[in-house]
Image (tube, rainbow, N blue to C red; front, side, top):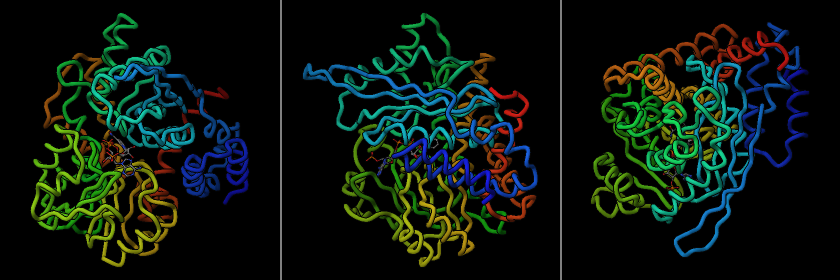
Length: 445
Ligand code: NDP
């Protein structure tokens, strides 16, 4: 690694102890920047790398709320505004018990490059809370969201910072957050949050965008190899927003997703996932994948292990970080996997990525393959700003074009920097170059 990159990496590690996922994300990007720093040493000047690795602002706040038994609960809220060189901070809110500053910083750092890849003029940020929505009543979720927004509202705005959903934050939570923002500010500022309901400023295709975009990206990867997803079996992990719409798009393309999962267990359905049943259980009843298996005679339920043991052509991780271990990668490769496209953020551990690449299995990192979600969020902001409403077909066409551009930009950049076919180098260098050029133009700020 270039000595400057090594120095920034070791200094950042020393300044951020106890933050393994943040350092994992940082290391992956830094390791890719060697060729561009060699060719353009100016990118290592002006403290650019030091500034890029230090968030512009980190907000941590108390979120007190009262549960249905009248007890006072206290959670911790976060918003990390990482980089605004390309536009207002943009990135989701995650509500999950595992959330801490490390997790939000890793996600915020990834978001900088992902958002740059979309070419939509958006900076990188991320937020959330260690609030666990599982088992909470609707009333408790509403009270929590209202308390969370009572602090967050002073930091966000359509021209400063625009949050959206992520794990544990879907349409219901965005509704409660938007309602409290409107109440506190007295302004109906549609562009302050994305992922809104269709009747009050939301965009068609936003719900589907991340999963659809992930599968479109996998299709472009297949086409690049003269292949297609049609007739291919797919393993999908998770059963939330990204997983459900990855399954839907894969089915539309003639592929056969045969798995899904949640944090309790996983399902193998050799007949192919029955999407209507899965949506009914997850989106309407807020149930578990165990309930899917109970209602579907062809499905097996497993309460240990994970979906990666099933023989498939395509792997579509869509649950959470570090969910594909080196052993999982070996198992997938042994069973003949050809394409891995990440819907979740950083789902594959670094050793797994190395194994896929060594085996010449096409592998695309989340910051490229799952960028459709934030990409359509930017289209939602565009519709809000122009008070326009686009059709499903038109918006999906724009998503497809965006995923194609990201795919092609990654491959072109990888080729330009001597790493043909390497989506990791391609995504990291393309995103970095766009952000770094803007940072250099803006001076030391
Ligand atoms: P959801 O909350 O809708 O679904 C998450 C799914 O993953 C659930 O099935 C959940 O199971 C499972 N899961 C979460 N954490 C764990 C864990 N620690 N172990 C096992 N399973 C787990 O979230 P999304 O679908 O929105 O997000 C999934 C991934 O995609 C995340 O990495 C997110 O950052 C990423 N992403 C999401 C985008 C979006 O637009 N929503 C955009 C880009 C990336 P359970 O119900 O048991 O918790």
